[in-house]
Length: 241
Image 1 (cartoon, rainbow, N blue to C red):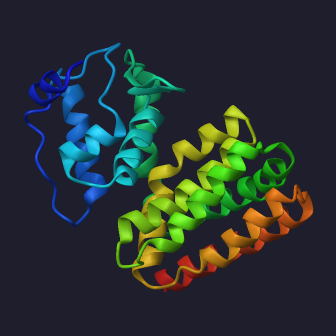
Image 2 (tube, helix red, strand yellow; image 1 turned 180 degrees about the horizontal axis):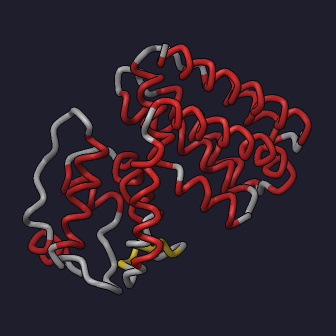
């Protein structure tokens, strides 16, 4: 697809406001499927192209693509890009219902607790399985996270989740990765609230996780992630009181 064709196909897309950027981008991208502008088998524009069209960061675009991927609307092929999938109604209904089921405060806390159970062991597996390339990417996410201002809530929260998603990818376990993708919307919403309230303290834990995984220290990775998840849950509980 040429640049002119991309512009013609996406002519209904509008620059978004600063508030709720990720949600606005996701909803507009979803409209492209509903309106038939993006058809099964078609390759989507690159993250860079979409970021330019929407006038947002690539992190925001990546978040929207992850949501669409979790709902079975697109598939991402390594080295090729993202493509529109044939509809799988069962999977789409399941993924669309999950956020509505868990958005009540007490349910979000349950999801965070479930995340803790998954991510603690995930960190240990990642320490044993991670490749040098994956470790390099994790370091990059950590450095980029440090450079983002907390006032940039969307980007700050998304970078936090990208860091954890990278750890999940390091396991090379499709079930762990899929579980994190399904919970992505809920975790992002919870993290945004925590960041907005100034209760986030994840960066020191992320630094120790990078060190543990690079050293292939399974025990240190598990202990660090357990403390990190405990601190996150306590921050959310404090927020909801």
